[in-house]
Picture 1 (cartoon, rainbow, N blue to C red):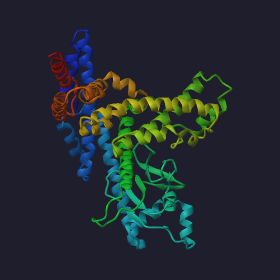
Picture 2: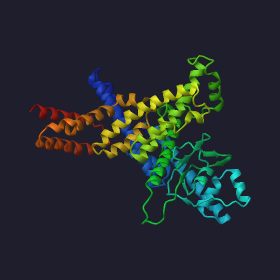
Picture 3: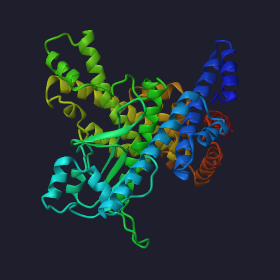
Picture 4: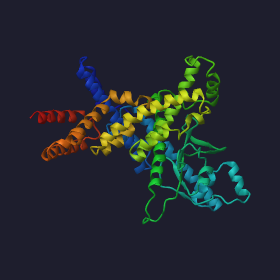
Length: 454
C-alpha cells in the first residue's frame, strides 16, 4: 500500500513556496486536510467492517486505496489488521461458546456468561447456587466485541467490572498480551480470549417497545472504546505511539509506581528517575481519559458530561494506580491532570459547539477521529496550529453578527437580511463538511465586509 499521490504533490507544492505568510497558511491548510483525510479513512474502515463483517483484509485494503485517503500506509494497514483481528477473535469466541452450549444444553448468552465468570464464582454453581441472578442476553451484533447484556448489578460485577466507570452501566474489556495481537483479559483469575462488552440492562425483543436511551448511549460508548482500541493498536504497531499519548505508558508496572511513591518527598522531583516515572503515571491517566472523552463524544455528540466526571474524580485513575488520595504526590498529579483536561475539553468543545451552530453533523463525527490523532495534552496547541481553531472562530463571529445581542437594536428587515446571510453560509458549508472550511469562510467574510460597508 502506498500513500495517495495527491499528498506527495501537495507536500512538494508547499515546500517550493518561499518563506512567507502564504507558505505558513498553505502548510496549515495542508495539515488540516491531512488530519481530515486521516479521520475520513478511519471512519470509512470502521463503517466498512460494520457493514460487511466478513470482509477479508485484501478487499479491506483495496477499499482504503480506492478511497484516495491513505496518508500513512503503515498505520492504515495496521488499523485494517487490528479491526480484522478483533473481528476474528469475536467470531472464534462465539463459535466456541456455541459448541460448549450444545454440550451443556445452555443458550449462547448463558454460555458466554459462564465463560466470563471467574473461578471462585464458578464454584458457586457446583455448590448449587443459581447463576446468573437475573436475565442475560446477547446484545446487538458488533464485529469488534461480543456484547452481553445483564439484568442485575451483581451479575455485572461478577463478570469482571473493574468498577472504574462512573455509572456502573457498561464496560469494554481488552488487553494486548503479545505481538500477535491476541486479545485476552485476566478477569479475576480467569483468562478470556476475546474482546467483550458487558452492559447492565436488557433490550427488548419487541419492536413496539421503546428503547431505553441510557442503554443505547452506554452501548455506543463501549463500542467506541473498541474502535479506539483498534486505532491505538495500529499506532503502536506503526511505532507512532506518541500520536495517541505523549509517551508510551500502557506497560507501566506497579513496582515503578511504588518506587515513585517511595521516592516522593525524599528525592529531587526533577531528578531523571522521579520525573520519568511521574510523567509516565500522568501520561497513562491522560491516555485513559482521552479514551473516555472520545468514547463519550461518539455516544453523546459532546464531551460535557464525561469531562465533568473526569475532572471531579468519577474515574479515580491515580487511586487505582495505588497513589493515596490526599498525598502530596496525588495532589500534584491531580492538579496537573485537571488543568490538562480542562484545556483540552474547552478547546475541543468550543469547536464542536460552533460546528453544531451551522448543523455540521458530519464534520462533528469526523472531528472525533481528528482528536484521536492528537495527544490530549496537545489538543489546544495542535488545533490552533491547524485551521480547525481559526474556522471555529470565524463561525462564531458569523453567529454573533447574525444572532448576537447587538441584533436586539436593529430593524426587523436587517434581522431578516442577517438570517439570510446565515442560511446561505449554512448551505455552502454543509456541502464541504469533510474539507477545510477556511477558503469558503474567507470568501464569505469578504462579501460580508462589502455588505457592512455599503
